[in-house]
Length: 137
Image (cartoon, rainbow, N blue to C red; front, top):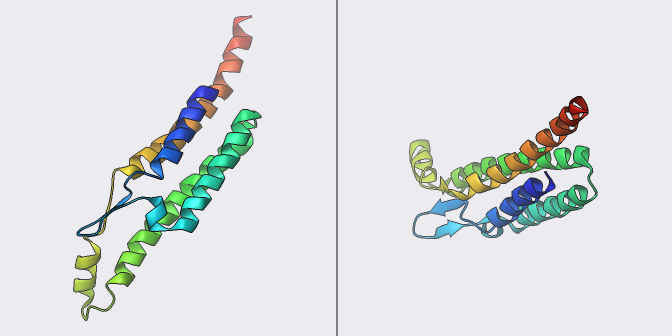
């Protein structure tokens, strides 16, 4: 199941380079264009997770996976709030909401969450398979 965890980790790292936010006229932004600090956090979590996967510490891998999910959710909320703040110069709230709505989340988030989900699925299968082998003997 380590292979599935490593594939999931690869998807998370690769997802940081994929389009996460689409802004008309400006184009697509990945984690590095959204915020360098958040991108470094994703890579730091990924490096720690890689170490924990290699030394087979599934409890810590699970903790890191949930921290990554929290980081992704935090980033999405921050993007939405920043887009509202970016258009705060407009005089009416309805205009602010309308213009903030043009900032769309892109397909890269699917890859990010898919990677973490694969890691969690691999952890679950890892826990189930040794029990099944005990019953066969």
